[in-house]
Length: 451
Image (cartoon, rainbow, N blue to C red):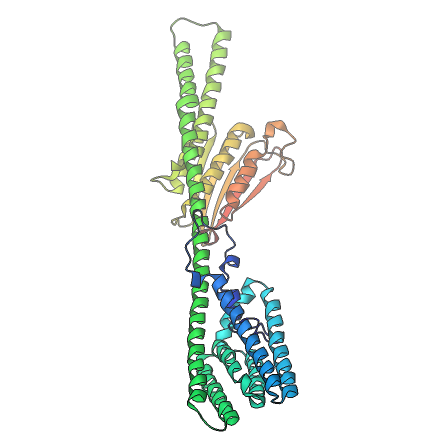
């Protein structure tokens, strides 16, 4: 019926016909449909059933209108006037249908609004229905054959108007139909009273069922949207779990193979240098150099394992994890300390992990490229914001051209830091000059990340 319930362009079309639009769940969810077989749908609650009912009402209106006009011509009861008024009523009904079809092309959101407005009533929709009802009254006055056209008009009245207006409208239209019968038949008859009354009751029942179908389709559309959103969240959780599992596996493989092999090499080199037999000076220097390179490789490997392993923060706070990182960095020859400003508060795990990984990446760059002797980590707790600063006294670099000097690194580590912080709405700032050290700042809005 939505096409018949259309209104002038000033407002979206309302009424029963707009149910077709609001009842189309296929346009509601934007995500991919849930995996597996589609949910079973009762035939009467499918969108096609609602559309079929709407089209059946269109056919009913058109059929009764044509029947009345044909009977008027056959019975010669004001045939010219009856045909002219019938044509005007048909044009008005078609006008509403055209506007409703245009409104349907406006998108699912406008369709849903129109469907909800149909039962709430609107000035333009009421005016459209009033003109249609007046046209029917004129036809019923011209010929008794048009009296039965009241049935689809009753359907429209109940579907378009709020209940407080629909009830008196249905009663009034039914009384008008009974009066039209009495006028044409010369008095009240049982058929003339029972026919319109039973028709009104049937129209109300059909309209109530129609409304329930439309509401059921809207609920089903909302359910599909919820299922799609839940599936998307589940997929994200599964992807994250898979990533963590792969990182666990990779960390274990590196620890059990490369790290253990490097540890064995360090022990063997220490054993050789500790032998009682004196070694030539050149050979001892080479062994010392090899032992130093092996220790450096072992520390780098262990740092890589810690970066891959997600259990760095298990059982400890971010402050404790950063203090451990500072101690490990001091052991490799760069004096590193940690300062904490502000009152520490509990952090969401993604924020703590992002800052720890950023600190590990920055410290790794200091050890590998900065040629620094000192470094300082400063963790600052602020209301709604957390900041981590890593400063060293190394040889620095040009932040605008990090790839020009191969000794300054590849720039991949800095890009990884930015990407990791961006995942929790954080930002990375870099201040450095050649020969003047480097300062890296990571800032995360805590509240934004929690949301």
